[in-house]
Length: 380
Image (tube, rainbow, N blue to C red; front, side):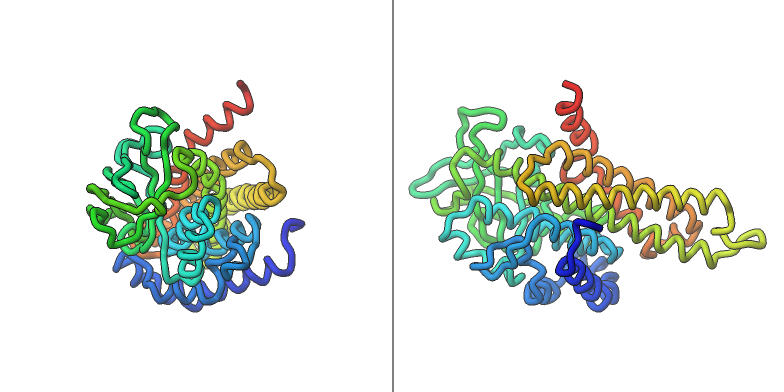
């Protein structure tokens, strides 16, 4: 592929080796306990996985969106997407807010721990009544002395139970409505008034800890304001593009992995005197799905390349996210079907991929939201 080079290929191979050595042998236990052990994340930080996109002066590698796409697609091969979500929220959804909007002192304070995997991050935007509609959030931030007092509830927060640092969106100007008056704040675990309301029991992503977060008169100092006051909405929108890139890459990696597993299964499983792969209906369905996954992968890397050029890719990212999010539904559905009863057994790789892949068309911007973004730019 023209977008790849030797460094990116070597990095992909390193990621795949890590998955084979540390993730696949242990993923079942992580699913049962509901989170990825911190020592695994610190090991990833020590290798350099968490510093891909961060400045070299803080110990990062200073790479671009192509590296994120390679990383996320490779994580999709693990078949433990809760593990992948834990990592990608930290690397590409939460901590980039610190890089994009953080002051030099904030970066110096937090980035070394973030890159080392010693300080796992989460992004607290979604609320019970505000998901993709960020402008509808209600969590408030009012000035109190030389700091701010936060009140509100956040929902569906990945890394919410075991994370150590959160970037929280709150309405800092109560007289403003919609997207105006929203600011971002840095809140450390253990801050008075900040607590985990409950751990959420999810349909998939079982090895990813997800929680409701409660801010009850949570006071943070003035230096906890991340970026400019009132500019949080624009920071969130900017970061959505990177978030949607890696979620798309993860979905494409999961799709290819599901196909690979199903190729192997159908070539050995016999029914009515022949292998399942000998059946035209199955063989041709898998071939068409493979063609579509291959096309989606090329589009993924083209969009990542456009991002590296500094191009405005809101429309392309929306197209990619809608495409990949729906494609993984079709692929995993067919692959589970072709596994028959085996594919319905809890804990098998194909059953887990089917279950985990369901979030791809919901999280990070539902398919319907993505299609509206496309329509606004295509036909109006």
